[in-house]
Length: 326
Ligand SMILES: *[C@@H]1O[C@H](CO)[C@@H](O)[C@H](O)[C@H]1NC(C)=O
Image (tube, rainbow, N blue to C red):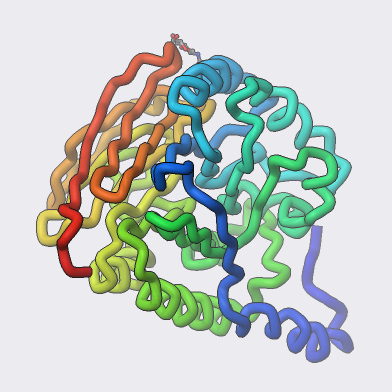
């Protein structure tokens, strides 16, 4: 697959593709529960036609989702393996999503972003509103903001930040809408930082595909440490949640309240390689399959990790007094 436009069209299509990235990040609203609380699941790196225990994880998500009366699901990307979807009519969408997450409690909006594997297919198809007609739960954009009252969520497209993919000649990436890369990234960072600064929500959650800090297979991501960490810390982000590494992990920063959370264990896992962490504090690491739940009120955020049997294997609570100045 080649996505570069013919030369005589290049200048023209450049202008077309640049316009949307100059615009502000798309913003969406949803109501929390009647008491102002919110609960949701987070899963990443999942679409494998039910294989590698994807179906087992889905069953457990259904049960925990029911118990916690979840409002929505967040997907941290790598939604469809190995190479995204081929087009809007690719049966993979049904085989790896609609026919797998069938539990009643999971019939909610799925807020999703793209991972590097999604970029290896037809990325525009995965972003296409047409998929919503096939399954109305599907909601996938590169970068967007979700306001829910007590919490603001900032979804950020991390794949274009990673230098490695731009010199990876083994795979083809669908960079339509991302080129020219430098302009795309500059605008994204500018809009992202502006949106964070403007946020008055009690909780600020950022979701990206790639980890910033990880002791698993891929390790830390230098591009994100450089470009995102200063903005996250400066703007009092509570949590950065990602996938990409097929594990569940919780890392705390030494010099700020920012947490680095990985939920990328939706199917294939058990990699077994663990790196050393020099700077931050690893509170929990599990390299098997599973998912995460988060429950929020104005004063408390509690998150939990579950394994493939639905057992709660780690739990953590953050509290913010009501009268703290923000
Ligand atoms: C599925 O989960 C079980 C634990 O219930 C584990 O023993 C097994 O290795 C997993 N299978 C795969 C393919 O990862």
